[in-house]
Length: 221
Image (cartoon, rainbow, N blue to C red; front, side, top):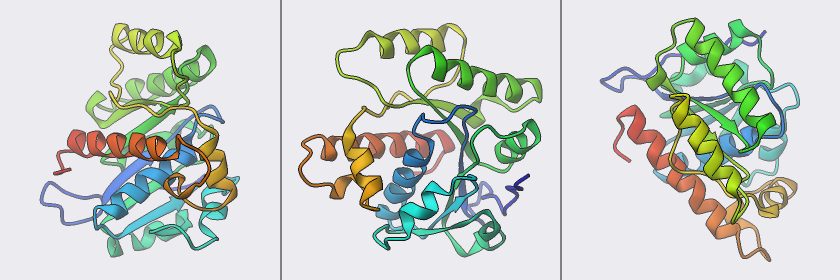
């Protein structure tokens, strides 16, 4: 089991900003979200660590090309979290309850990526049930809709379900695009992908996500 304890930022910002990402289901854009949120934080002038706690180590492979504007390391790097302004934690897929709670308790905000379909939403809701059962406040986590298809009713239906179930969710979402796969394959950011007209919009999607995320935490965006 991975331990996600780090020196969490206080209200006086005496430590790093810590953002965790978790999902019971794979293939929902968790690592893609971790990489691009970290990149947007780095673009804001912060020294950022992306701690890769996933067994597949996708984020670590993504960072080996040396094209990312932040440090990528294993979860063991959390021992040096105080050397950074912000830490983004890409937790392993399908974490045990104790691991999920450890991540939630040590994050300023826990992001739960989900696709706007039954399978993705079900996994996200199961995650929230664990958080609620153990008293994690609802203002400490939020769902993030990813892989949104244009002109699809799935996003509207998913957001309606989130509202009806009183599940906090980011208003910003992330569109579906092959540009993200191309970015992963090239070990770069989606903003640097060439030959895909949606790449710039995909990058701006995560800009909006990061801005909203910082506002939820109470940090000037």
